[in-house]
Amino acid sequence: MKLGIVNNQVTLLTRQDDHLLGQMVRNTDTIFDAISNRSNLELSEKFEVNQKELQMPVPEPRQVFAVGMNYTDHSREINIALPKVPSIFTKFQSSLTDPNVTVKKHGNQTDWETELVIVIGKDGRNIAKENVDQFIAGYMVGQDLSDRFVQLENTDAPQFSMGKSFEKYGPVGPWLTTPDDIKDLGDLEIETRVNGIVMQHSQLKNMIFDTPTLVSYLSSIVELKSGDIIFTGTPSGVGLGRDPKVFLRSGDDLISEIEGLGQLHIEITE
Image (cartoon, rainbow, N blue to C red; front, side, top):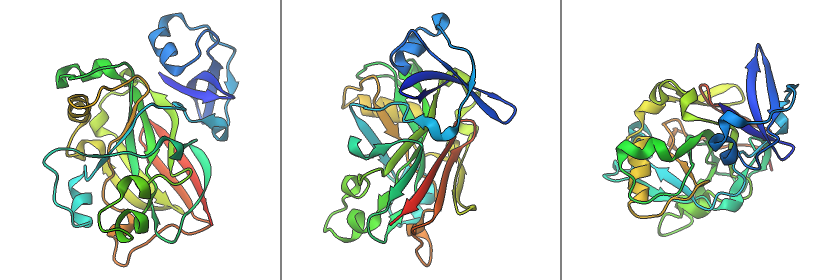
């Protein structure tokens, strides 16, 4: 099941040929209500949805977690040792935005990081790996835009959260896909394209810490809340890791896509 937000309304989304179709869910206020009440949804007639109409599926998560260095090849390209436990930081909530958006870049070192985003569906602490599926509402695509100057260069100690939390530096969506709609999460391909050129390409199974490990680890320290989201890290191919380094410029067209989960479309401006 794919659930999005259109005109501030929870909407069940389906594909028909090349068309995205929606049905307003009339008897729920949130995506989480729709998931828990999925067998009794009151739906409108089908209508065609323009992807530009889609809004952020989870508009106000209480907690936003992000994972650094979660792909071996990415850790190597930026010369950081492989972590022994998940490396956690946050993107502040005010940086989150819709899946089809124009972003004003900050400075001259704004970089791309396409990521799988986990959406937590119910509260939990000390969740065992084998029980993690019970706490996941679904998955989204996320773009962890990063100002490398603020994050790494203009500081004595790395400032991951600050460098990644400028306005609209966290597009997510385009919808939430429930776990039962995914045959094998690890097989899904993840890709970034800038002006049509592939910059990142990998599979989710190449994560160092998989989704059960991440959720279980976080819940051993923090109480996870329904609606929390987790950016799970990015594969190699970021601009920082290239020689010479490459960063986003005004006019660039940035696409973040995960197979079966949809794509984000981001236009970069000064």
